[in-house]
Image (cartoon, rainbow, N blue to C red; front, side, top):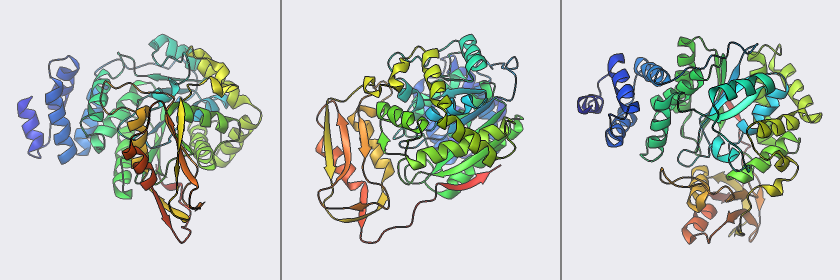
Length: 431
């Protein structure tokens, strides 16, 4: 292992056999975390080429069980986001597409760095279980169209170990590590097609269009090599999605989306990605037809009913859909008010995500517990007018917020005199 760390440190290419050795030995516990941490940093700094990245994804896939969903009729279609702030899209999306007939086997992850995790959000629902057996997972998708679970100990176990290590070693943003993590889980889950939401902007791991496009192309290429059609959307993360950051808060906002009362950006992105999933599942001729199907499912209550079913299937309290006050509630709130008037011309989205982590909404260390009740509710976003003393955001807290967190949230809002142009939600689509 020492030789292989040195090889990648010195910008050399690792062979398929060497990558298989690393993943096999680390999964078996024969390589300690400190050596894998060193290798992750070498990969972060020096990168991997397409062959290495594909080998890494394949080795992680082969580290465990591959699910066979062939007994479920139709094309199984999944969606994955590379992670952002306020990005709760999977939560309304999964029941929405299931209500329209898509079979959606979703193996999701936890928060990484400044970004939230779908599993952490769902665990804010009392009783919701993210751990299911393979048989339970298959049965749930077969009967009700969707399941959102963590990777079982038998599915891509190498990814489970590496995923947690990346979060606490500042190696989250490495394109080969993101791509291999995503595709190992998705290929193992038995999906036949995949829609990818690749975030770009100051709240994403990919800050530039160039890096986001490179990641999207890498993901699509790994899918192509494994006969899994992929469509990647480059979507904006220069401000949070919706108005909530934090686990229980984002569940409430997801319910609003399924009621047809959600924020415009969250609703729009849910419909865009959902429409692509319907087309890949061959349940609609084109995305416009698919969009109308999905809007109909929201309007007639089918999508909301599917969310209740999803929660019940995984032992959660589905009554929170009608009574969101049953979700964990913070003990106190604190308003962050504007010191100057004007327009919000920019937001430091990364800092807002980190502020949520600091008050307990995410993990600074691998073993940290997440507080489901805490978070941030935004009152202003880019383009909105602001008056002196007006609330920019409210912190939901279970303990006093340090002054540095209050200042971090305040300084995340850039106020100027001229109204900015609206942000473009979809930057690019890569097939």
